[in-house]
Structures are given as structure tokens and as C-alpha cells.
Length: 606
Ligand SMILES: Nc1ncnc2c1ncn2[C@@H]1O[C@H](COP(=O)(O)OP(=O)(O)OP(=O)(O)O)[C@@H](O)[C@H]1O
Image (cartoon, rainbow, N blue to C red; front, side):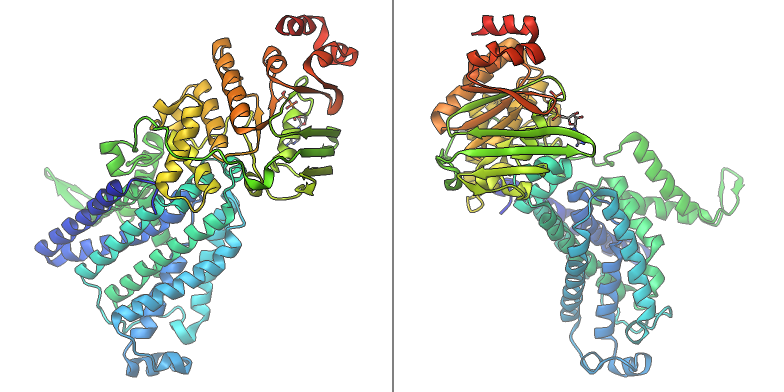
């Protein structure tokens, strides 16, 4: 099930297969050295596409993927080495390996399965880490795997050359493997898990607050990428016939990463473009390394020119096109757009999650300490379905921190959070949407490189995991229509105006079909007209969906006109609570926060 329309996906995949067929056809027609170059290119492309499944979709660079290549190569090599040679070169193999004689295809399947299981086990650990820590862990993985290969002499012949692998990888076999890898990478990218992983790549905090279980999504991407890179390892083993552990270490890691980075990590098209570009650089520079004559001038030998060339290619891309030569879009997206025009208001349901129906959300005696600072001090808040509660206070008074605790983004240092009397404090943030609690952020947190519709689809898919893509799209489009932004559904989120970004954030939260909606400064950056329109929308949503809303804003007229109750914080403490008219007259509020001027503003507003 892909989030991209079926016909677009078919076209995109056919394009990739056609590219592979064309390149393989060229190699076959040319024969000789060209055929060998193309075969290695296709195998490298499998590895790059595999690495892209993880690094491209999670945004975490991996130095460790050649571990899976090594596992694939050695596993398939051991299984297919002729029995007589096996008994001589690997005399200490356990019985089940010493006598196993699967065919080439079966050996490939087993090798991929072994690489997949290895990836899964390692991934259980690595998926706990974020960003640079995860990248460094992948480097450690590469070094450990290299050590294990050298140490596991009974299986690998240690640092010696491993030979006797039947040379079964022809250009056609490599092409079939490459087509499978590219299609798998593209299908994953556009699948529901792929979309969630890309959302987490763009903003992990927002993705988690929308219900994405980031660790498991990353683990899936990691494991799938391990399988694909494992396939490339098995194929290279059967192409070379002999190899040593060095083949799967730093030099080739650098080479494949260069392809990934130069082409553009985030797309399968980028993997293709990068593999082509770096292969061309290598092929040209390798011919020049031994020296050459140009217009009568003899250029001297320059060994290492290939590595220098690859390094320069990376530098060039980083300076000129940091997203890679192919940018952030797939080839079909460049040609036909990222899908969809105006959102159609179809399908969907207003049903509030049963967990939250007619229940009161309560924060009791909530406290949050940041080292020495008490950001929120013993504050209680209750929100009933259909009520709009305003949260005001000077800068730094603890409003956002209170929302963060109520939505699970921050753990409370003290106090309790209950929904309908049941304790929900301490639950991870990704569980809050399932309880009917959705939110927006003070500093807008959209999934920037995704389209508006994709941003909202992430929530819709989480809210209705068993819904079809058409239904999820309908629900997403309905949230966009509710917010009056149906016409920008196909735009990329980072191209929007400030006001539209805020509206998309609210639509994304609404697509979770929440019972409670927390809005952190939703009117910031909007003019009076836009703010009034937002107020109308929020009121309508409260009426129609029975939404309980908590709204933090510095726009006091908005708060006074919209809210049923207002809580006033000052230096982390609740200094007043009540109906807007009561609060604005409260002496502590006037003195501590509002002052005379604001008090007049409020009087005018009411
Ligand atoms: N993650 C954090 N680590 C340390 N201190 C923090 C953190 N988040 C907030 N604070 C501090 O807690 C206090 C309350 O911050 P908070 O953002 O909740 O206030 P606010 O009322 O929302 O302010 P504003 O209206 O400016 O958004 C501030 O002093 C802030 O510096």
C-alpha cells in the first residue's frame, strides 16, 4: 500500500526498470570491459539503493552498511563453494555448512536472509540512537564486523583471500537484482512506513507527537536496507569469485557513500544519479592515473587521482547542491509534480476516539523543573470536551512547558495527568494521539520536504491504521478543507507562508480526529483578519466535533473572545483562573501581568 497513487507508482517503477534494462543492454551490446564496468555499476547501485532505504528515509548517515554486504558475500560464498574445495580451505566448518549444496538462487536467498537477520539484531540496538550517535554506532558496526570476519577464520579464512565462489553473476543477473532493489527502495519510500519515517526525518518531535513510533519505523528501514545491501554482497561475491575482508571496509564504504551523497540521499533517483556520476568519475580518472598525452603535453602519473576526484565531486555537490544532484524529488515528481491538486472534501468521519469521548482531561499539581529552574510550579488544569481553555502569561511563565507535559512531549517532574480518571502521565508522546490528544507547536514543526497533503496524511494514517489510502487521503483532505487550505494540498510545506504553515499544523492535528486539541500560539504571525478567521474555524470545530481546546496565545482579544475559561501563569505559578471577564479584573493578574494597558485592551475586547 503506497501513499502515492497506484498509477504513478507503476510508472515510477517501470521507469527504474527501463533504466536498468537500457544500461544492461548497452553493456551487453558493447561487451568486454564495458560489460564488466556495467555489471559492477549495477551491483554498486543495488548497494547504494539499499543504503538509501535507511539513510535517505531516516536522514541518518550509515558507515556500517558494508557489514551486510560482507555477510551476504561470505554467506553465499560458503554455501556455493565446491564441496571438495570447501573441505580443503574451510576444514572446520560445522557439518550443516560443510555438506550444504544449495543452487545459486537458493544461496542468494539464504545469504539475503542471513544479512536480514543480522541487520534486525543489530538494528534493535542502533534504532535506539538518534542523529550523530546513530551514525557513530554504524561506524563501530563496520569495525566490529570486519574484526569478526578476520576472527571467524573457520568460516571466512580470516584476512586471507576467500576464493572458489562460482562466478554466476552475469550482467543479466546483476540487472535483475538491481531492478528488484530499485523497485523495493521506491516502494518502501512511498509506503506508509516510508512516509512515517520521512516525517520523523524532517521533525522527530512532531512525528512522535503525531503518533509515529520512530524507533520501530527506523528499525524496519534499517532491516530492509540490510537485506538489499546483503543481496549486493552476494552478487559481488559471485561476480568476483574471490575477495578479502578489505573489500567490505573503508574504501568501498567511502565509494558507495559518495554515490549516495552526490546523487542525493533522499530519493531512489538520487541513488541512480550518484552511481552514474561516480562511476563516470572513476572510469575517466582511472584512465588518466597512469599519465596521458594532451595536445603534445605529457601529463605525469597521478596515482590516487580517482580518490581525489571522488572527494572533489563530494565537495562540489556540498557547495553547489547540498541535497545532491537529483535534489529532493524522484524523477517522476520532477516531471509530473508531487501528486494531487486541490484537496477534495470527501469521506472521513467526525467520530472522536472512544478513549476520550466525554471524558475530562486533567493535569493535577503539575510541576516541571529544568535543573535549578522551576518552569511550572504545582499547576492544575482541567479541560472538558467542547470547552475552550485559554492559557496566558508573560514570556517564560511556563505555558508551553505545561502544554508539553499535557501532550507527553515532556515528562512531568511532579503531579499527575489523567484522562477520564485514568492515569496517562508517563506514557510516551506517540501514545497521546491514540488517546485523542493532538497538538501544534509554538515554533512551527512541519515535515518540511513533504507536501501539505503528506504532512496531514501522516496523522490520518495513524488515526485510522486500517483505512485504505483513499480513505486516509479523504480524511486528510477534509482536515485541509476545514482549515480552508484545500488549494495548497500539493505544495511543499517549506514553501508556505507563515500563516499557512500554522493552518497546516492545525490541519495535521485535526486529522488525528482528536478529542482535545492543544494550540501553542496558533495566531502568531497572522494579521487581524486571519486571526478572526481562525477564531471562527476553531469555534465551528468545537461545535461540530465537540473538541476540547487549550490555546496559548499572546493575542488577548482572541483569548477573551474565544475562551470559556482562562488560566493565567506567572513565573510558573497559576495566579488566576476563571471566566475571561473575571480573570481580567483579578487584581493579581492586573498587577503581575496585564498592567493597566492590557487591562484596557481586555475591557475593549469584551
Ligand atoms: N527544555 C528546556 N530546558 C531548560 N529550560 C527550559 C526548557 N523549556 C523551557 N525552559 C524554561 O522554562 C521557562 C518556561 O518556558 P516556557 O517556554 O514554558 O514559557 P512560555 O510561557 O511558553 O513562554 P513564551 O510565551 O515566551 O513562549 C523559561 O524560563 C524557559 O527558559
